[in-house]
Image 1 (cartoon, rainbow, N blue to C red):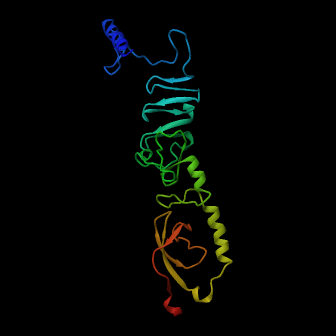
Image 2: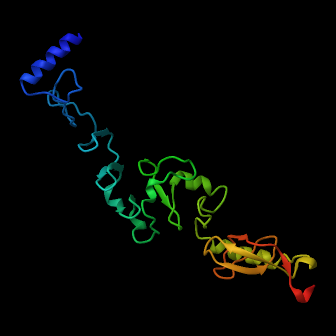
Length: 221
């Protein structure tokens, strides 16, 4: 059978139908959506660049991404700086990080650029798979890379204001202050210590971390 294949290859070369040198039969291979002989449809969608056959999912080929993506195309735009196709509602409304799509998802550690799962852009500019983002919100609200708030927390911060006001600290802690670092604005400030949370004096976020030891005002010692 191998000898027959090689003979077919030689005949193919004689008739100018030779494919690549690694193909024994030496035939010219041509990928296409429909069979020229029987008109069989190999795929509802076919990309002649990626040679991708698939069911119709409104796919389109993005030249900048270099791959086919699930559309429809009119619902997406390609961000040149992020190097990724994003939903149209994010055009001009997201923070760009150069080539951010070439990083893996910090939740599942899988590739984002070639994934069929839609990417979610956090306010800080980092990307997560949409499904990973939804799972993350069940456990917390901060970007796993930079700790910036992953969504608008303003309403919750105001609720926390009320809880702090209604929960006075014991007398020995009432005049205690602490240095904090804000994960949202990266500012530093000195605030009154409270067990429920310490609010940034700059942006009023409670997404803060203690940056030094507690201390009591000198006039109260």
